[in-house]
Structure formats: C-alpha cells, structure tokens
Image 1: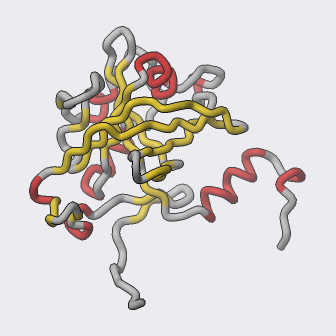
Image 2 (image 1 turned 30 degrees about the vertical axis):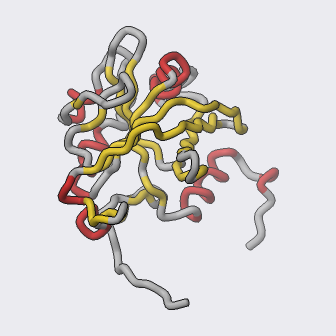
Length: 199
C-alpha cells in the first residue's frame, strides 16, 4: 500500500503517524498562568533536541479539542506568556493521574487537583513540578516555531532533579526502576525487554 499525504485527510494522516512513530515518551508538562493557575497536561510528541546546551522539544497542537476547539491550549498559552515550564517524567504507576490531566478542562481549573497529584516548588522556574514524578526537568523557553497544524516548543533545561532511589550513579538512571510509560497509537505500553548489542 502506498499513500500520498496530499490525498488523505489530516485526521487520517494523524492516525498513520501516531501508529507508526512508536513508542513515544510522554512529557507531562506543568505550567502556570499569569493569574497563578497551575496547569498540567501530557504530550507525546516529545524528544531531546540538543545535548549541550540541553534542549528539549515538544510539539503542541494549535487548537484544543471538544469544547475547547478554536482556542489555544493552556500549556501553549502559559509557555508563551511565562516562558517557563517543567517536564515531569511519567512512570507506569502514574498512568491514571497522567490520563486524568489530559481532560479538556476550563482554563481556570487546577489540573494538579483534578489529577490528584501534588505540586512541588521548582528550583529555578516559577511553575511547580509534580511531587510524585521521579524526574523533573525545569525549562526556559528558547523558541516556538509554527509547524503546520502544530507549534514546536523548544526549551532549554536549566535544572534537572531525580529522586535518589532512581539514580544509578555516574549520571545514569535506573531504567527498570523508572519503568517508563510510552504512548502508542490510542494505547499505552510499559517497559518491555531490555537488552544490549555488542559493537
């Protein structure tokens, strides 16, 4: 089967992409509005853009869904205004709170409360992190680039924190203990077999 992207709908293209570019890590992004409202939302179009300086990128849809259709997502609006955000790691055990935080809630809603997780003061940025998350990466906005239907948000990581029990020493994480959650198409996956390859 061969497919010309120009001959199918955006929805069909989206389904092809999210079912093929897998598994994807989840950036559980916490932000704060100019009114001081905490926002928390997951995004799976997420990866490392640069190691030095440490840059992370997240692709955010230009518009909300459902009742929020036609409006800019709160995460994007907050990052534009405040130029700071926190990427919280999502282990398997936080699947349900992460999923709850993806709900289309009014802008004045506190997703930390809705997802039943605890905000914790960050070290170098204003938005709080998720206390229950084992890894938190505090970021300053570098740039936002419009890419078709999405906005590519690039942030410089200015502070990294990891809970002691997940640190394996020598700047490495205990991946098995972290048990990262991954996004597939409409589903999720836990950590599978881990193996190495010889040179």
